Length: 187
Image (spheres, rainbow, N blue to C red):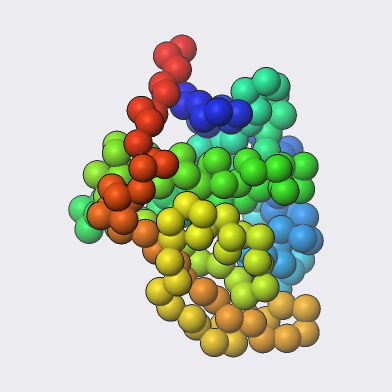
C-alpha cells in the first residue's frame, strides 16, 4: 500500500465491486472516458473490465481516503510495455472524489511511482476535448500536449478530439515538486 497526503493507494478488493459498477455506469464518467456509445454496463461487462485491468496493467491502484479507507474515490493504473519503458496512465474518479484535488494528488503519485519505482522513461495519457478540469490536472502534474486527434470521439451528438499528453523522465527529474520520498505502508 502507498499513501499520499490525503489518499490511500491500495490493491483491488472484492468489496470494491459495487464502486466499479457505479464508475462504469455513471453517465458523467462515461462521457469523458468511453469512446464508444454510452450505455449501461451489465455486471458481466464490469467483470470483463475488471479482469482486463488486472491482466493488462503494470500498476492498478484503488484510491481511498486515508481518513476513511472504506470510501473509495476511484482508481489509477499504468498500462504499457515496461520493456519499452513507456506506459499509459489511466485515472477515473467517482463524482464524490471530483473537484477536491484528489485527482491531482493521484496523478502526481502515479507519475512519481512510474519514474521512481517503475523504471519508465515516458508516461502518456489520453483526454477528451472539453474535459478542461482533467487537462488542468495533467498540466499541473507536468504533462504537455503531444497529439491532437481531431474528431476522434462521438459524444452527445458531436465529434470531439482526443488529446494525448505526456511527461518524460527528464521533465519529472527537473520538477522539484516530485521529489519527496514515496511513503510506503507495510501491512
